[in-house]
Structure formats: structure tokens, C-alpha cells
Amino acid sequence: MIGTCPYAWKTVVMPQRTGVTGTPRSYVTAKGTWPDGPFRKDTPRAVYYAADIAKRLKAALEASGESVTAVAAALQVARSTIYDVIKGETFADVRTLALAEAHFGVRLWPDPAEAACLPEH
Image 1 (cartoon, rainbow, N blue to C red):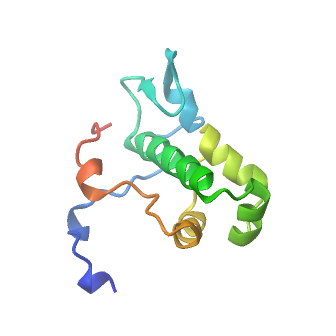
Image 2: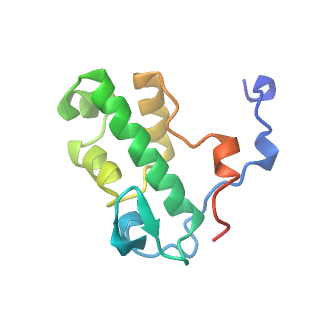
């Protein structure tokens, strides 16, 4: 399936946890709000991904009309996991993202074109 994907996967930069301390929301400036920012100048790229994923997950959840409890059961995660990702308390793991994308039928991971515009930190 990856071989037929139209995206140039070799050029996509995957965020790494190296150098990321604290929660994703801890990188929001004092005048900002999660997940919209603004973010501190030293914000790692992974935090921008987390903010975008939080926005997309919240939108998908609201559009579905399902309860967090029902979605959590479908994804086989605790309800708190969904809340924590949306609130920026934790980073979503790949398994949860994959299951959520399949469940909602929408992309939660940032698009490669959008990711290319993120700051380099």
C-alpha cells in the first residue's frame, strides 16, 4: 500500500521525542491557548504535530456525534487518553492514531504539504 501512495514519504520528516520535555501544551506562550498557540520560539516540531492532531481529533469526535466513552471503547483506549490528546496533556501514539483514523474515516496526521510549513525546531 505504501508503494502506491501518492505522497512522497521519503521527504516527510517524522517528529521524534528527542529534546521534547513536558507536555505538548506546555509550549504555548502565556498569552496563548492550546491547541491554537501562539507557541514559544523553542517549540519542537512534534508539538506542532500534536496541536494539529488535537484539532483534527476534536473535530472528528464532534462530527461523529459519538460519546468519548464509545470512541474510547472502539479504539481500545481509556477515555482519558482521548481527553489528554485533545487537551495537549500527552502525545498520541501511532496505534491510537491509526485506529482513530480508521474509525472516523478521516486523516488525523498532518498532511505532508502542511507539515513542510512547520517551523524547524
